[in-house]
Image (cartoon, rainbow, N blue to C red; front, top):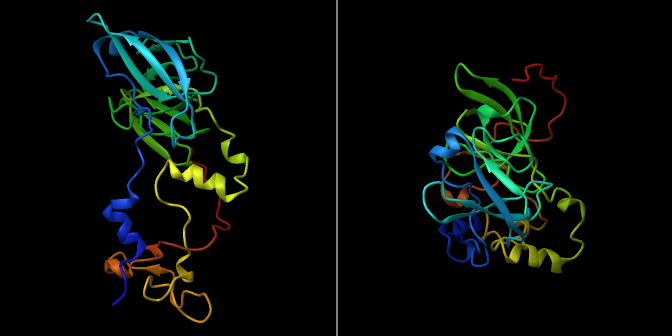
Length: 256
């Protein structure tokens, strides 16, 4: 009987949990209220900061509370062009300008957006990585939905009441500069989680992984495996529909 493989150990947590101690806060819009649903709220960018383990800059935005004498502090990923002291408007009647937060029903087709809500009021879940953006492809006012093209290229239908921020996420050139040395990779992943360095499975012993062992480094069996295979043997390309490079194929004419 072999050891517990790395994939199973990661699922348990323990030393593989995320390192969250230095993070500045969650990425989220302010709570959706009556003022935002029917008009707009005015906020100001207090500062743009670095958030540990996040590639994109982080903006601290402060809104006035619509009904009480207090402030609402939020943190969201910063779009390209946002600056400290900038006024941010959030709501149905806000202008289509960089950094403003609008429901999808108020954003015209072809607009570049980021930080999109999956469901109304969840604070923004999609297109949040540095340099990422999505595009509104089509609006269906009868059904109350919008068709959005995500950074992956896939298209998704979202409710009109879902909010999004205008613009693309800042920090887009981050991956252009190579890490070059192990020390930089160490500090990059140190603040994320225990995922570096990663030992190749064929370099392990047979007791450590299904792909380990042998006089030469080779898997010795197909790289694909069943979804129903037991935990210790489920390694490689799990339940793969296809493998190999994507070659050929026609062009898709349906843009919706």
